[in-house]
Image 1 (cartoon, rainbow, N blue to C red):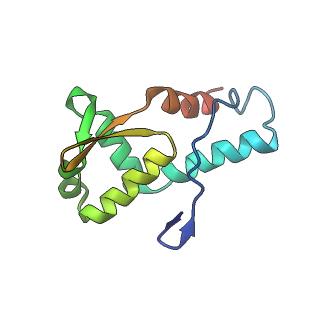
Image 2 (cartoon, one colour):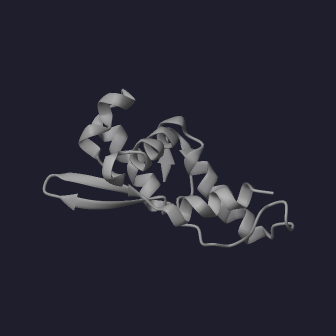
Length: 116
C-alpha cells in the first residue's frame, strides 16, 4: 500500500519478540516490528490512534475525526484503514459510518518491544 508515494507494509504483526534490549532481534522479528512502527511513523495516523484510544467509551466514529485532524474524510479513511490493516485498530460498520476501537494487545506488543 502507498501513502503519499511511500510504500508501507501494513501486514498485521504477531507477538514475535520481547524487548529489543533483551536479546538481538532476528530478521523476521525486526521486519515485523519495523512494519508496525512505519505505520505509526505518520503524525496523522499517530494522532488518529491516540484519538480513538482516548475516545469516550473507547471508540470513535470516522465521521468525528476529520474536523479535529483538519484532513478530508477520504484521507482520514485511508489512514484509519492502514491502522486497521496493521492490527492496531478494529472497525465496525454501523449504517453509513465506521466505528473504530484500539487493539490494546497490539499496542502492548509495540510498547513491550521498547521497554528495557
